[in-house]
Image (cartoon, rainbow, N blue to C red; front, side, top):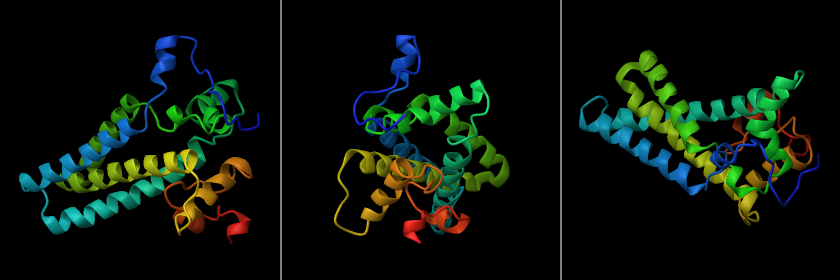
Length: 202
């Protein structure tokens, strides 16, 4: 199906479930920035991390998120659809976005799903890094919020006349020219490192 600049896909027949698949982009961005700030504040206030650790771990968490963003986009959202079940999962999570890239209410996962995933990641990273989790996960969640902002901006607005225009071009190539390249949205870093940069950008 060619990308459609109008309309939206119907994912569920149930109207309640269908409504839950849509969200205004400001809501998850606000939620995850607030949680990120709260984690840093909590970690500093109760002495789990100091200021230098908070800054370093925050940057590390943001870096980790950038790899997670790339990996999820490449290997989950663009999984092989060699069975009907995989095809359904892929379309529910991402395929509908490629069919209707201008549907502004489906540019982010529903907040409840994102919060559940973020909670799971917090406990996983707590087991791995102990009290350092407050800085690392704060950076990861802030990275996710910035990803949401960039993803919304490149679909909703014309590209700016500055260096950020690269992000618009990069993501447009993924949508309208070759879906097997340019998986990074908030940054092309991992496309450079892992060999999925578009040919025109090389």
